[in-house]
Length: 307
Image 1 (cartoon, helix red, strand yellow):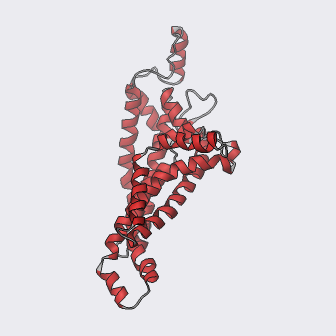
Image 2: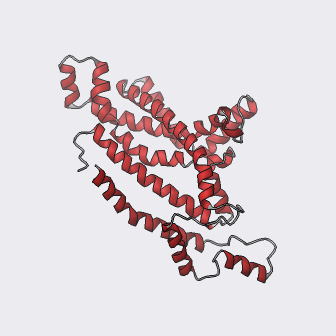
């Protein structure tokens, strides 16, 4: 298993290299610059600033310098957050995003798998139609629409939850962001679970288990769920990475100090190192989580061999 994991990580290096390269040149080719102002800076001051950040060099030399720093684990200084490096911002924002993301994905797994399984067992019933209808609604409504609606209802009309801020990590400040992040994942997981479980429950080995006189609970829990959760396990890799790194929109709406908010501010302010740092961090997280998913696959499906 260790050799398999090392091979997978080794094969991910070219992918990561392509992501870094494309992101670097796309950021540089975008209109505007990190030090553009409505009032033009004096040429001497602007030249000194560009030289201090090595932005006066040709773009290919900037790229080579950046790649050298990346190999040392240095994402560089932020252009807008004075006295902070990108590493500092990621280390500050990631624990916040991770907390919200883990809460959201846990809620999504519990509710989504439960609702999808019950819907599959009651196929074509009113509950099945209700779950799938709610799931489709959750998928169709983007979270940047759901977030203001939840804030309006629970924060403004009912006045029971704060609509913005972090409050030092107090529980009540996490409720609305977590719910907003979890709702789309609940919908996706419920649909995946339902579709997979419907197919599994009509399989030959399920009929054999029932013919042996096993109770329906044992058939579902011990036999059906193990195979029915395979699509969900595959989906959890990128989904977990997405919610852990935090939705850039959700963290901005609720004013949560996670890496998503730094990404948005960095993009608006042309803070190249911050945007690049978050993109690279996000890519590494997806690669690692997908590797974990592949390893977990062996537990749910003994036919899968990693060696």
